[in-house]
Amino acid sequence: MITSINLMRLLRRIRRVARSLIFYSLIMFLAILFTGALVIYIIEHGHNPSIRNYFDAVWFVMETITTVGYGDIVPATFWGRVADMVIMPLGIAVVSLLTASIATELTSASIMRNLGRHTSSRGGHIVVIGGVSKALNVITEIINNMERRNRFWDITYLYDGERPSSLPSDVEFVRGNPFNRDDLIRAGVDKASIVIILPFDEQDPVTSDAKVALLVMSVRGLNRDSYIIAEVLNQGNVGYVLNAGANSVVSLGSFTTTVIAKEIFDRGTSSALMNLIRRIDIMDPKDFIGLRFGDALEKLRISGRGILIGVVRGGDVLINPGNNYTIQSGDSLLVVS
Image (tube, rainbow, N blue to C red):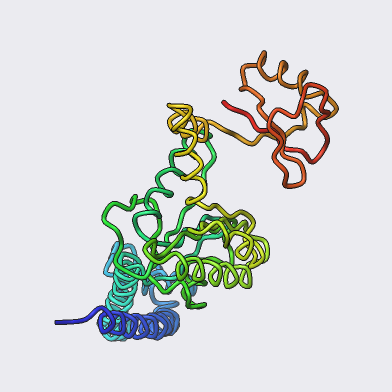
């Protein structure tokens, strides 16, 4: 039984051979085309009214070796026919070799892509790294939000295992070890605009959070400009992951415990929060700069664009900061749509 590693080696070897065959067969094709045309031109010119110039000879040889055979040009001399008898089988053989080599390369590339062993050509995309179950849920939510907001990014999922059967077909899958620099580059982390790093093993929070922090450092080393979102299992590790280079760190554990505690006293809080999270948008304040919070709230409500609930300033989130709070350039508005 052929193992996955042996299959990859075989495919890479086939691709190397196919690429060299494409190069050499292309050189032979061009040599036969232009050399054969020169021979036909020397023999036929002056004897064949159809061969008026060198381009006519090139056209004739191209017809011959590609087996098109329009019949608009035919050899008129004995030696022209002899030359054509030599050019024809050689040219057809080389064209067949070139076509087969290209088909082999395309087939191998397709197989490599389906197995996730290719190198992503994307840039400015979202790369998701982490355990399958959590990653699939996050990818689904991202797609839903993109459709709702009519803003779209390409998504690539990097995972060291088989492609998940439920992964959406338009999500690129790259199989590789996320702790291997070369595999991170294959997934396009160095060109990504957003990188999402999720826990790998929720049964071992300490090890999982350590892996997340290590991966954040690796990604930041490859891409200084990407926006890195990470999730940790232990609230106490948020600071470490932020120091490692993450732009935003989510601690599901602390969020869950807070929601559960609130649910005891205010039943329905969990459902309300989930609905609120899905509907919250960050809005550019350009139309509201200089306005007081209360005036901006009323203006936004009348326009039907949503309800203003807070302002983000310098990394601080201010919920309902007061009617007299002035919105400044550089702020972001928290809006429930």
